Image (cartoon, rainbow, N blue to C red; front, top):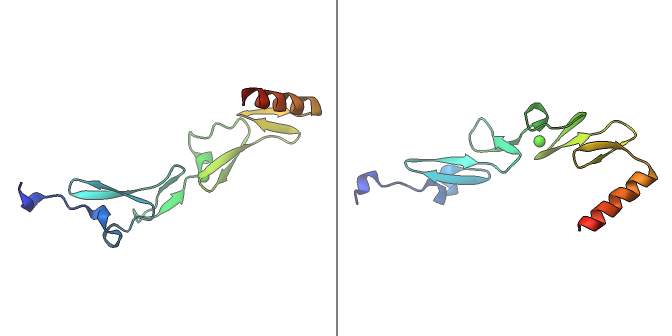
Length: 105
Ligand SMILES: [Ca+2]
């Protein structure tokens, strides 16, 4: 083995990589990675929230609200979010949803 070109695992020492979340060692280098819902900040080490409402991940039919690490869809007043749908809720609809959830579980 040629030790002159041996890879150094920078991820083995946090003082070297400084990744806030996770370090991924690569031949001759390393990269910091972030959990789902976050992206690397400009310093390449820290993670910042992704505003999914401004990305194609936004599949909301009405309004989208960004959350730290995720997002939620917002329904118009008087409607209830169920899965990805906004439905008008009445007592009957809520009972049907509960029956469906109990049946599935
Ligand atoms: Ca977010």
